[in-house]
Image (cartoon, rainbow, N blue to C red; front, side, top):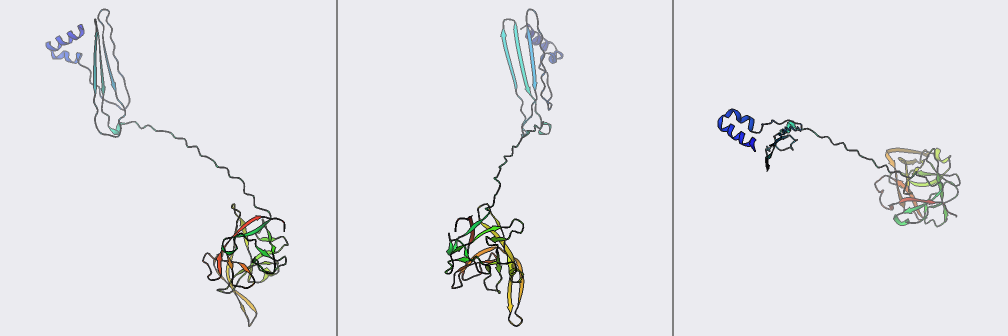
Length: 278
């Protein structure tokens, strides 16, 4: 209390003492600093606590200046606290970098195991759920609703060539038709593949147990004068299956491009199922 009276008298007497009694003015910086000065007297204790807090401002340009003065009197002790927040500009702010650790979840997928030997089932068209039929000998078309046979074909895929082989060693192949005619699938011998209008079908099994197959796109025409077959290679591949119902002896399997060849064709998917007993 004596200190307060002393400051009041000093201010009245001379302005030179004003700097001793008024709180010090602190300039801001980009780091937080605290200055504390505490003095103790035996009989009458006067404590002056001045704290300057300089903090990182947000991305606003508004100045914040707040002064809190608390005066507590108890007998001969007086405590004065002054807190000043000094403006800092966005350019002076300290960037706090947050380190984020991203844990990548690894999904382990079970190893794909192809079916070693399988039967083929039509999905869609007019043969949905029906097994692909044919003959044990090479040279016959493969298809459905065969009036002359009910032999269910069983295949495997050669791991080296991706050719589709039946259990009798015959190769699934395509016989190219003339432009506008059906290119139908047969079981072929190796000798048949030497003819220009035949080609082996290469396939892979998919995870959803279907056949993904392709052959080069061609059309072939027989020259009746020379009895020579002349083939023209087209752009792309034949990689879509269709049923062909333009014959009287069954519904046969054909291949073409993504565009439906037209009348008598319906798109079909070849599903596989593990081979069962005949």
